[in-house]
Length: 115
Image (cartoon, rainbow, N blue to C red; front, top):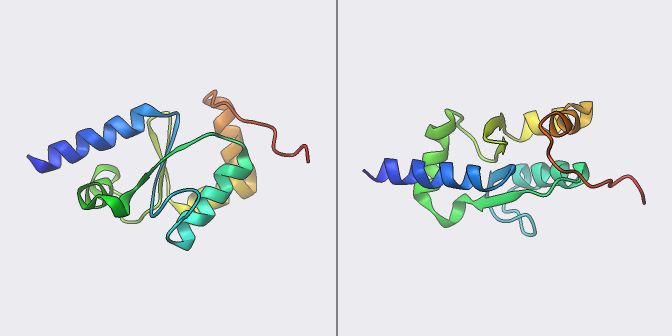
């Protein structure tokens, strides 16, 4: 029963934003290096994203790993699709694939290169 409520809450969070990051801590205060690196890649891509601090809720922390069948946190979802964790997001950012995916999925991006 509690698994279902955790899954429903996870799905609700994913549905609430085009880009959703399940992470340790918050974008302003990440609680692990992997979460910080993922936030940095998203921020440098210029996308607005929601986040869920898995440290605040053990059901979500355990549930997200089963939900995605992915053993680690952070986890990134774009338009409801699981993308991956820190290493995948960082590689996609460095290759330009992440920004390309945001364009293909019509995720609003701000121009962050104009500095």
